[in-house]
Image 1: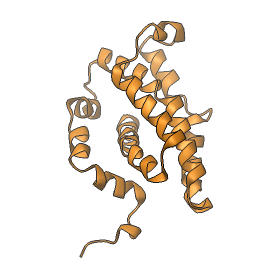
Image 2: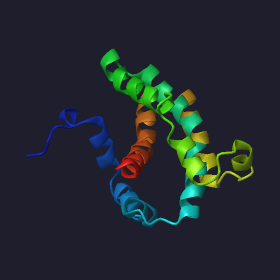
Image 3: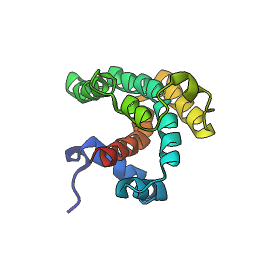
Amino acid sequence: MREDKKTKPFTEQLREAAGDQWDRVVNHKFTTELAKGDIDKEVLKKYLIQDHRFLDAFVILLSSAIANARSLGDRIPGCQFLALITGKENTYFERSFEVFGCSDQDERMKIPDDSVTVNFCNLMREVATKGTLGYVRIIFTPIILIWFKLQLISS
């Protein structure tokens, strides 16, 4: 018997909506090497620098999703996640930059944005300001993939 969508967590609905794309991401060379702990350090360093550049646009998008949620109960998980990723305890990037010897922000800024970084940041900002709640949910599908990546890193 198929489980009713209303009883499934929203994140599970998004994962299912991603379909094959989810599988391509979780089975990608980068993801599998990251999970095994044998990813090339220069590849990971470049990735972390680019990933950090998503943070501001992501905060804008998440804030928009919180503001447009249907109820307080729907807003609370987003608020908790927003507090987690922006809180003082979230020193993941700073600690990572120290480990990879790139803690100087001016030095990191000399590395240009990849086109995917620019495009994804622009998309998140556009959806936050002009998108519907449904479109915000669609954009959160890759965000869930980022969450999955962070879970791999922290485990």
